[in-house]
Length: 182
Image (tube, rainbow, N blue to C red; front, side, top):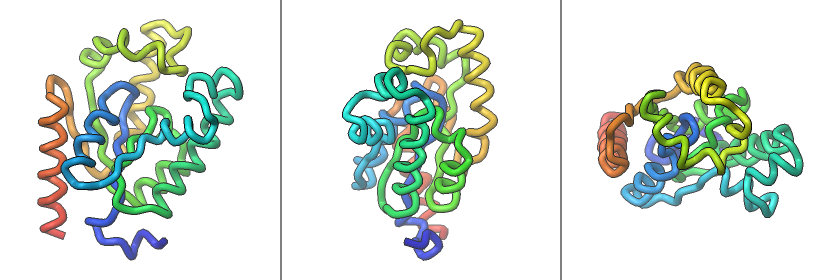
């Protein structure tokens, strides 16, 4: 499928951002509002290995996880359409994934400040293999390092002190306006 043949309305919408910012929560709401199917890239990796990402990291290592992640996401971005896709926090660090997403999809960056994000750490740390064994300072360094990659997107939504439903509604309204304009 050639992405250049797709209209802007047919393109997948991809959510990027640091782990725990709400990509899955908001993505599911956007999918529901746009009558599209929702795909969580980490769930697809879990299906492929038959185990959660944390166990894939432990059993096979990060390289194996990232290779499968790249295979799945590039396929979704180049061979599928009309999906809402949530990427894992580290996926967009891979150049091949960034390129596939930016060329074939609408990429929306969900941005949450460090101050607001660190309030969520207790809720997510056990399920995120990349955070295991890291100090808060090391996690903060990773947070800001990844921001550089996330800054390459089609649209950005600040989510500090925002309700996921409000964020999803704003994104859908913005998309519909863009579709009308283009």
